[in-house]
Amino acid sequence: MAKPDFPALLAPGMHNLTLPALHALAVAPFAGDVRRADLFQKLTTWAGALQACGLGGTLWLDGSFLTEKPDPGDIDCVLWNPGWASPAGATPANQQQVQTLLDRATAENLYGLDLYVVATPPGGGFHEEAYWRGVLGFGHDRVTAKGFAEVNL
Image (cartoon, rainbow, N blue to C red; front, side, top):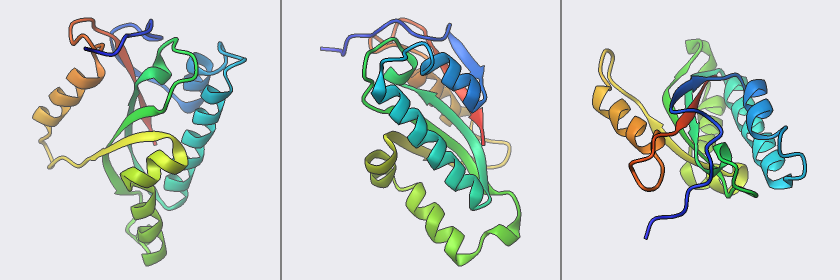
């Protein structure tokens, strides 16, 4: 039996958002929802830590966090092609920190993220992108289209 779906916050398709715009969409309208605010704060802490190490990428976000569900459990996300902004940033300390930040168990336990990391070959990635658009772009019934967010780090 499929999980029930709550009303989506985004129309079907991918929506490029900034972190402040994501907050305005998924946190601000739910002023009494402490869990939402906590998840967003953890997301921004995680993203900031990646950027402080010099790592960038494109993040696709979805899950109950982008629905009207009260107290969402986590934020589903896919980090596409994480890469160093500068080769000089890839110090051993930064590499170790990034490895920890991108670890699925750590991301879930410390940051409330159901994290997947996808690295595609140059000029490739069609099948991976199609797969994740199917996962993120539809409800649990796999019929009802819904939206998801894209945030550039």
